[in-house]
Image (cartoon, rainbow, N blue to C red; front, side, top):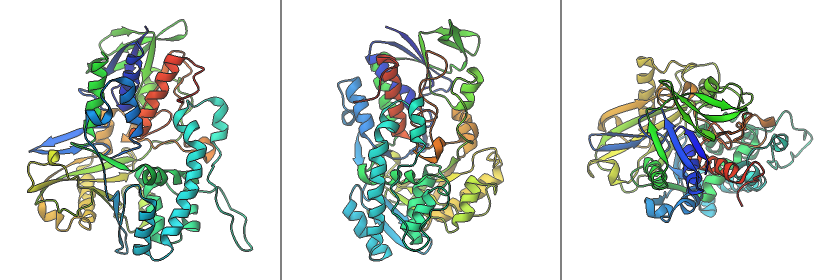
Length: 500
């Protein structure tokens, strides 16, 4: 039985801790904050409750496997999980309104044909079919196997099977990007916005993201969108309880400031206040900047700039939720270039109208009574530092623009708001330690490896990386996958090739 110190109590770290404890190891988690969950937080006020992190779960099979492997109670026995239908409603700049059913390829085709004209659904379906080839080619090496040096070069190639150009000028100019795929294969600006909106929601610039990013809508459309009753925070709570049941120890308010090294390998952690926790191995679930501060160079070279962050507005709303209200509505922006430059370029916050995701859960646990509803608005924005998200006027102005945009989904919203609270990338940075409040995207093949994250095995023997800033990247499901990979590497050894 090995002693294992886990740095951080985020979802990936807790997923690794639960699996390692079941394997017989003695696991202790050191978290600098006062609670577990990392970015999967919760805001409660006046009987209203909001997720401050992800609002939906995709690929629930990751957590089903985790709960099966770590205890008697299944995921569904530990919480209430339901499919969201429609999966999403989309409101485009020209006024087009379409509801896409959950996990129904034929239903999506029919809905797009009805909203965008005959043939629109088939064009979208053809693209998703090609994205399936991306999924088949990358599912195992990207999501089920540790990232190894001998595979990195291969994963730098984009597996998207683009159809050949027709006509005299068939030569492709430059790398194939998600934006070029959208322009060539979808043409209709609404379908383009639908595809690029998936990238934007994950903090990816469609102008530079590889065509393999088409796998993101494929996964959502194929495996569905799921809601956890009480909010996704309930998933973090259930995972925490599972860790406790497996006798994982948690130390909150315990900030790790250094590593203990003996004989060239990790042998524990140093805590603020000069405390030391000895261990045989260390698992770090922290952002790159924090890791670099106490373990310089162990993760290898950086893989790009700080990713975009999330701006969230939590609204306590008077009036009952209509029965036909969609759980999730995406109100697409009206100036693609201005928004992408503001989020990814040098334009700063600008004066554009952002793409806003409106979440209106039909969940009595999130509101004081049926005469009110809890509404969450989110937008992908530039990280803190490139925009000063501590500036009160900037924050208030952007929140106002988001509420104004959301009125397309919730008529009369401004008049119904009782109060609002806001979370910016500056708040995320303070709460999680992630530089600029950046939210990591899932890993992607292509782009010569620029869209990969550091491997779970580091240059320092005995130190492993877990969570969204490590392989296989950000998102609830990917965090769970990273926990499984780290546990496999520790339990089975360096020769472990991945889940079966």
